[in-house]
Length: 294
Length: 294
Image: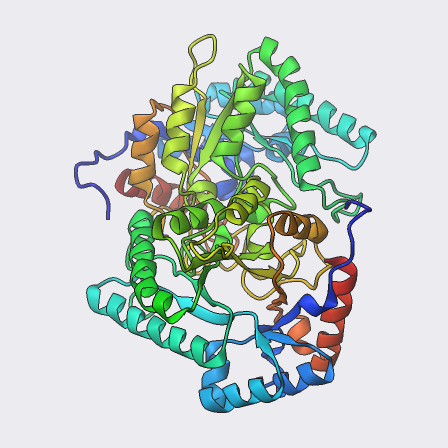
């Protein structure tokens, strides 16, 4: 099913997205776990950092000599009114500050879906309008993040999240936003969200060809998990690499052909399986599967 | 949220996809229900027809003076081996024969996902290979359906079904297949599957511009339901028109701008809600919502 000549991935590229064991461990415990398992890169979430404290986390990350392959996450730009959008802009600037304090390589953006009311229900059916809010919100945030030197990484989310999480659902759309908005903006490629796209190879190649003024690639992150058949929950039923149908070596080869040499970040939301297991077993499995399957 | 100048849809365009009340009624009961509710078009499913009998159903359809806006469904082309693909080809030719016997306007194709083993589990991760099997399968079926005068309508399914139901997931892909395979092939546009696509308007317009040798449009069907937030099941939690976030009048306007003048087929899979209700109430609600919301 995959080209037999593919080399196995470099274990040093392994990064743990901390959502993978978020149900079992605090961020401090995750950092300790990474040290035990010889994991050198993580990508933590804002709520986990807030719980443990930003300064305390920055110290722990430094002491453990961890690199942050990314910081999750900014975004959620659309809102029904100007005050809601201003609040999102404020919050996103704080996310940039936190990413800088933690030395993250990029701030991942989950851009948001349709504008929501206070109770979380959709306030509009205007998808094109939401996409315009996303473009405007990223443009404004870039004015803050670019001079600070914090790259922003748009993560195109699977189209099944278009209404409620992210209305950027294809690599082509993310590439178009990068073309329009310029330096300091790139893409986080998550196999779970984009594996189905018939244009995936060409859009990864397009992202690889696009270089910023300082020669940096648009390809800022590469997230791994697997698509299970059947998928029992739209949000928290992702598979461990190898348990699903995504041809991971093929997509990795496309990333490498496009010049990507960054982290392989494992991010598995799995309420029914991996979030219920011993987190040490989860980390060990992530590492083994990464080496064998990706 | 929608252009105030939009006219309401012509009630005569209303068609009932019989899956909408399949949990409550046999096909014979659905046909009787359509007569009571003044519904002039239906789109039945093969398993329902098989249960009631093809000849008996053809007689009932004729006696009720119903038009079949489509017949559901052919497709499911990919298989792990040649014998599996030959069996699919045989079955698809039978589907064409049934569609002809019932006088359907088109045979809808749900093309299939990755090849499956006998137990239904995926036999391959080769998505490009599955897409090639789909192209070859449709090409072969066209040789049978085209001279018989039965149009085939590719239904692009939502990307969340790429693995297990259909690996044609965008209008652009369906248009490309139509470009390649020629006359006798068109597209069934189902809002549930394509509403998220940033290229939807342009791809509907492209389909509308493409005409076969006999001047027929590529736009063969238009299916209606709504995308609920949250969606609690990936297969059987579709919404009644107006209960979700799809801008139905906007997409209808794109279809009409592209020259579509066919049926508005209501197709709602809803295990938790509409399949539990009095089917007469469901039909009445479908008609009212169609007139008000689409």
